[in-house]
Amino acid sequence: MLRKGLITAMTSRNLVFVAVLLPAMTAAQAQTFPSKPVRVVVPFAAGGGADIIARVMAQKLTDAWGQQVIVDVRAGGGSVVGTEIVARSAPDGYTLLYAANPFSTNAALLANLPYDSLRDFAPITMVASAPLIVVVHPSLPARSIKELIAIAKTRPGQLSYGTSGNGGPQHLAGELFKSMAGVDMVHVPYKGGAPATTDLVGGQIQIGFNSMVTVLPFVKSGRLRPLAVTSSQRTTSMPELPTIAESALAGYEAMTWWGILARAGTPAATIGALNTEIVRVLKSQEIRDRFEGTGEVVANSPAAFAAFLQAEIERVRKLSKSTTIKLD
View 1 (cartoon, rainbow, N blue to C red):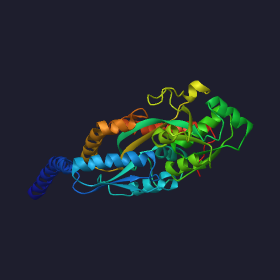
View 2: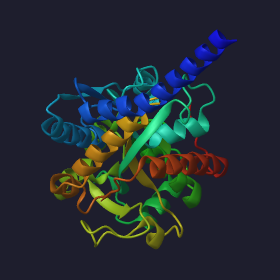
View 3: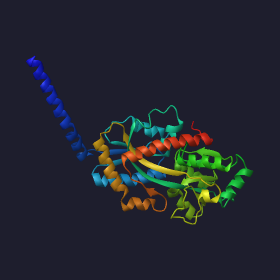
View 4: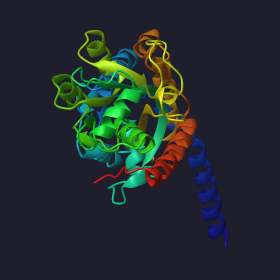
């Protein structure tokens, strides 16, 4: 009995020791994070808006941490390829996902994803949100949203709009536009925003719902004609450009977003350390300047970003019931 009591007492003391030691170890790990290079997986084609911002962030984090932050572009499968890489990575904070709208769209519309979008990831922060801009090739005579709708109705199935891929913000914006305007336009998915913009400028497709970052240079040079923005309010960069809602389709709104996630199971202290430094970088003047007039830096908490993702997945599910949007 005495021996059993001693063993029980020793076990209890050991459990208390572990309970006290583990938080201290976790905190120490967070203070030394990162101790090796960090990889940020961008599941979209190189040269697009996501890739551009990710590289700016990576350089600033490299400077802050003294460890290389590597941008690893892994496009394919509507962002599924790159996202799965992070879902299968070690839960240590050294492999991060630079996510955008396809993350929530795939979760809402695809039944056989090789990962669970909510259970397999730990949100760190939402980077930013931004409207899209509706642009047309100059060969299309439309100079307003009303004129675009009128032309599309006289040419059903003949006009095409290109996007960065199935399930992306451009795809959602285009399908919502088709549904509310009652027009038939062909969706042409590309492997990223950059090749879609290239074909739009070249006239292979006529219409784009593009990020302002990627198309503004072509708008300013006259190679693309802007018609409207997809947000509920006009943008400060082009205040003369109306919204789709005020132009013709009341209630229309479509936004793009970006965020950073880690593998689920990453220690809470590491998630906190990542959030602190990434938010600091996002609030820097250089990053804010990148979004000036074209979007808004969010830089929120892991809990706030998690709540947004849950709400966004549900929003897309509801949207899919009132539009023709489908993912193959």
